[in-house]
Length: 403
Image (cartoon, rainbow, N blue to C red; front, side, top):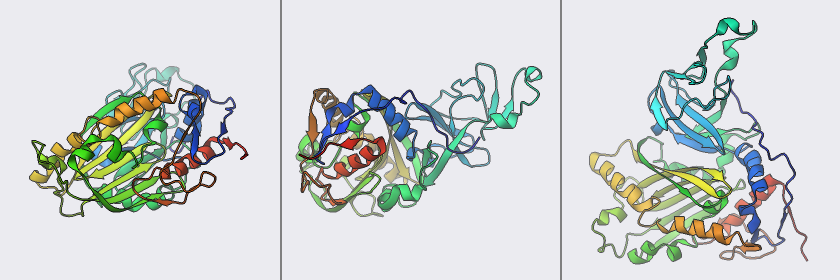
């Protein structure tokens, strides 16, 4: 049962919201209303968007699998015994029971615990109990696991539940070279491990991060006297943004017991900090020598789950492998040296956004009455406005008339 599928939610009811007239303003209610959240599931998470769900380094061998979610729908990413990677709805095609509950593993066959229907790692139905009492027209070929459309970029596996999603290359657009840089140039990665956490915030507050806050919120940037150099910051028409900036060596790392936590050691690439944030909510980062993909999905309007996955490159020698392992979560994890404060701010954002009114963007905004261009300075926040413009279009909201 290959191909994209539509997933209907209870969000069929009309959602009424008038967007502020100013391009730099957002209504706070968009972060809390359950009806808006349900419409987001339908139009964004189950609509024509691509969602990174795994990297091939997480399922390198035939039979390997990983479970994840798109929105609230459980999915199963499997490498079949034919070495092909497929993405399935993690639900038995008989009565809908979740088929696999393990986070990762390896298996040739997958048995539903409810009525013992048995599937192989290509998603095909192999056997079912009580077949002699089934209708005569029953055909096992009609009851394989429901495969959804998937594609890859440098080993990063994307899936979509929308029939009308564009080709992956079109979705990524100008973000492709930035993403390739983060993924080691060729995507030949090995998995180091994960850190998984939940933030008490709306998924849009989590992904509304920008460069303006970095030297102001994160104390480590000030302690290290980290100076950024020249760089590039773009936003695509589909709300993806990408940034590449020179990051000079720290001017003050002596207070650290292990200064290697902030060192660049991979001499195959120039010292750059590269970030790609893909709509709706995946952040991929190369900072110092950390290769980090932050897979995420919403839990509710008030909570989001993020899986920080860390990788090494296949060509790393043992010393470089150890360096990446030590640097990864210690630097960029949810409790990392330079990212510790994010979780607290996401929570405070969500609490503050429960008040009525609007929030606004300022840094890098040229005019309140016109949308910005597509290129910005690395510490601007105006680029987020373009992501919101894409969101408004998908959701079908109308902007208030200008006075």
